[in-house]
Image (cartoon, rainbow, N blue to C red):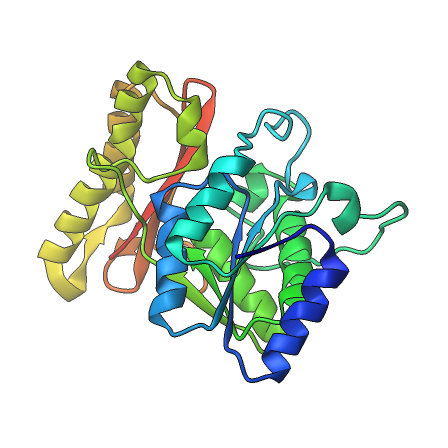
Length: 282
């Protein structure tokens, strides 16, 4: 497995491999890898990628003031070992200065799908996400890139960016990987105390109950407003502080009033000081 820290060296290598006919996959991550990340590598292997590039980069421009950039978990040695074991063929671990040299002033914005939800609560977040992913696409020359469904809005935004800017990169969205308890895997789960971890289970439980109720109703679906109140009450009982509880069209991210096939429910809430997100599609 190759390890790159220099963007130019990664670009030369992937360009040569692609020219030689190799199918290249990109798995963008911020490190502190867990089974959810490694499932993305497995998906790339399943799709017969000859080269699987895992980027490990805590991207400073997607963190806002007061967010957890400085304390975001960084576990480089363990991440490299996990990538090697999972079957990645290259790891890209640049320093921030290599990705954003002095005087950097160019950013990428998606202005519709990123407007609400996490985009409304974390101003500038998706500008940072789109910018770094655009750079990774240019450097890794992938045929396809694999993202996790837990970051539902992010996946939609990246799909739109890749389409609108003609990157020619297929965006693959892999299923959420959950702990045995049902908690969606996240690097930020490392912040949780045992009590906070128990509180956080309210997210997946509320989503499962909501999905079951909507599916039982069939094509007609169920009204969203009373279900939203029910979810809010469940999160409050669990001691979580709600950031948002939204039902949207899974493609456009526009709000919906009825939960039926084609809709998605997206949640963001705090367990203690840790902000967690989760979602389900109907």
